[in-house]
Amino acid sequence: MEIRAALREQLIGAGQEHLVGVLATATPEDAASLGAQIAEIDFALIRELIDRFVGGAYMDAVGGSLSPCEAIPLPRTDEEYAARDRARSSGEDALRAGRVAAILLAGGQGTRLGFDGPKGNFPFGAITGRTLFAHHAAKIVALRSRYECALPWIVLTSPVNDDATRTAFAEANWFGLDRDSIEFVVQGTLPAVDALTGEILREASGEIARSPDGHGGVLLALARAGTFARLRAHGITTLFTFQVDNPLTSIADPVFLGHHIAAGAEMSNLAVRKRTADEPVGVIATRDAATVVVEYSDLPADLAGARDDDGHLVLWAGNVATHYIELSFADALTANGFALPYHRAVKVVPYLDDAGLQVTPIAPNAIKFETFLFDALPMARATITVEVAREEQFSPIKNAEGPDSPATCRRDVNRLYASWLRAAGVEVATTDDGEPVDLEIDPRCALDANDVAARLAHLGPIHTPTLLAPS
Ligand code: UTP
Image (cartoon, rainbow, N blue to C red; front, top):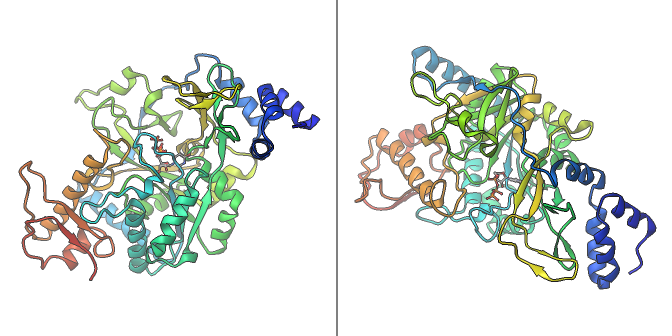
């Protein structure tokens, strides 16, 4: 194929000369497909990222000294319980006033779980095999009804899973939600490059190896899709962002919202106490008077393991990755270029070499570039972090086995539902391993312990796996 001079120059200028050769020898179909994908690449950005991240022993800097995160603690005193009640009441007012939109981050690749398809299609329900998408959707239904508000729902996808996600929603008849009240937004991608040479990799003969640009890409994607403007026109002031793989998320939690409002925060965060020094969870801390999240892989072991006089971890606050973000702040982060910094992740990426041979590396060979939503925290004028109980709000499905897997999540969900039922006076049997029997409470039936007390306290003893769903 003949390659336009401008394209040739652009590729050579960006250190991607090998693609000139690839295009020249590609079939017309492959060349057309590659050409379209190349046209979408921001070469100035890629050049900058390669210069910064490729070829050296680069590590994300953990510069400056980190001090513990100052969070609103779990209530223990009467005063703290009263503050929580005030926060709930103000958060509920804002929800009723229709100020909040919920944003589900579901553009990731879910490589650790190794599930075929969008992670949201993972069948996590203990009894029904209900998917994560269906579970989140049922909460949205329940919240709209509880607060009599629109609560628009935005689902972030990526080119890797957009079709499959829309199909899952359509086949489930939008989970009973009004089709127009859900908006899908596709996030951007960035090419994966060879870790040694910085050359953009090809996944197949007509395909550049691309990966989603990280959960921080949600801001760029929403800005480009015009979603911020649409939400503003509907009176939305505040975005609740949450991750697809944590079924315990309290979507649009009113207590969290009330604290966010009272602090005049532009962006807020939820924290759980880390279980162990080496738990693979980001750490929320304070640096130069700003709130930051440091990825677990970037935190030196001595800092991660430092303990105070009582033996508690100094950097105790694990990042739940659930935020309230003011719409005006989110908008500003994309107004003059994109404010979030890029990180690198070194991964195994199978590719075609320039001779067209398939290579399946056995060790990480490629660099992917990503932005993280939490990097916006230090840019916020004010932030607030709220501590929540892990057993109530955090049990992500990250890995196929071991910690943070479907098995641990199912156990935690059973424990939580059993605690709600037992608090309401309902007997729940335990199995031989001392865990409650499998339980599933449809969020449309009860969203929390108060709903269970109000609606399900009449139930007789539960001895066998049980689904509690609206009739
Ligand atoms: P993770 O960082 O856990 O990534 O995403 P992941 O893609 O789900 O799983 P691994 O790392 O490949 O195993 C946390 C949340 O952020 C979303 C994910 O869908 C998940 O809800 N996410 C991640 C995006 O929406 N876009 C991205 O580019 C990355």
